[in-house]
Amino acid sequence: MTGRFSFTLNATDGQARTGVIQTPRGDVRTPAFMPVGTAATVKAMLPGSVRETGADILLGNTYHLMLRPGAERIDRLGGLHKFMNWDRPILTDSGGFQVMSLASLRKLTEDGVTFSSHIDGSKHFLSPETSMEIQRLLGSDIVMAFDECPALPASEEDVAKSMQLSMRWAQRSRDAFGDRPGHALFGIMQGGVTPELREESAKALTAIGFEGYAVGGLAVGEGQEAMFGVLDYAPGFLPQDKPRYLMGVGKPDDIVGAVQRGIDMMDCVLPSRSGRTGQAWTRRGQVNIKNARHADDPRPVDEACTCPACRGYSRAYLHHVFRSGEMISGMLLTWHNLHYYQELMEGMRQAIAMGRLDSFVAEFHAERAQGDI
Ligand SMILES: Nc1ccc2nc(N)nc(O)c2c1
Ligand SMILES: [Zn+2]
Image 1 (cartoon, helix red, strand yellow):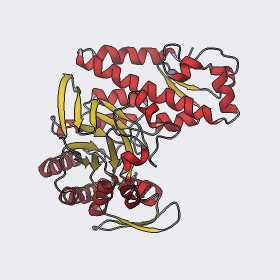
Image 2 (tube, rainbow, N blue to C red):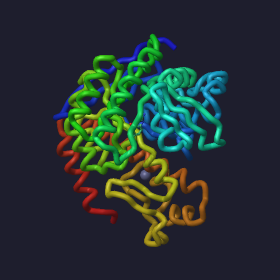
Image 3 (cartoon, rainbow, N blue to C red):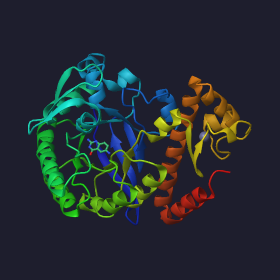
C-alpha cells in the first residue's frame, strides 16, 4: 500500500467545516458518517450496498475481531479489507471502550486491561501496545489510540485520573504505532464534562502529535444538552487543520448539532441497529414501521427518498415483513436508514460549502417538527 494520509479543509461556515481526508484506499468526504461494521460486516448489508448509500469509510472493532475470528487469522487471510470485501478506508476502534462495556472479569492497571471474553470466557489482555499490534494486523487505515473511558457517574477526580491514564496510554500508542506511511493514528480526548480537564487532555494529545483527534467520553449517557455543552468548546481545543472525530454519535439531530460545533467525523450503530428493529429515520423524524397504522399504507417510508426500500416497497409491505420476522425487513430498513444518514451528511457538506448551514439546519428542524404524515 503506497500513498499518503492527508486532510484538506475546503470551506468553513461558523465552526462547521467541510473537507476531504485522503488515504491510499480512497477519499473520505467530511463531515463524514461511518457505518459500524463491528464483526467485519455492516449488519444486513452487502459492502457494495454500504457504498451505494454514500459511505466512504466504515468502522471496525478491535475488541470483537480479536476475540473472533482473531486478528492473526484475519492477517493470514489478507487483512480486514480483503476479508470483508470492502476496499475503501476502515477506521478501527482500539478496544478499551468495548472491554469496559462488554467484557467481564476486567482488571485495569497502568499496563493495560485483562478481561474475559463475553463470547467464551477466554482470558485476554489489551494495552496500547497490543491494541496497536492488533490494528496493524487488521490493516485498518485509521487506528485509534488505546484509551480508557470512565463509566458514569464518575467524580471529577476519577475523570481526571482516568483522563491522565489515557494520556499516558496515548503516548504509548504513538510510540508503538511506529512509522506507517499512509496509515493514521488518532488520539482520543477525554475529560468528561469538565472544561479544564478537556483542555488538559487536548494539550497533552497535541504535544504528542496525531494525524487526527477524537472526542471520546461522550455519548455515554450524559444526554444531548451536556454533550453539546462539551462540544461548544472542546473541538476548539484541538488543532484546526486535523480531522475531529466524535465517537459513538448519534441520532440525526445529534449529528447536525455536532457538525455545527466543528466535528468532521462520526460513527454510530443507531441507523443499522434501529433498522433491524423496525425504526425508520426520515426527514420527518422516526417512523416505527411495526405500528398498526402502517398496515394498509401504500406509500413508501419517505416519498422523497431514492433508496431501494422507498423506491420499491410500501409501508404496508415493510410492516408485514417486520411483523412476520422476514430477513428482508432488516435489510430494507437498514439500507434506508444508512441512505438517509448519508444524504444528511451530503446535504451538510454542500450547505457548508455554500455558507448556508444555518438555513439547512433550520429546514432540518422545521421538517422534523411536522412529524410523520
Ligand atoms: N461513545 C464512545 C464510543 C466509542 C469510544 N471509543 C473509545 N476508544 N473511546 C471512547 O471514549 C468512546 C466513546
Ligand atoms: Zn428510503
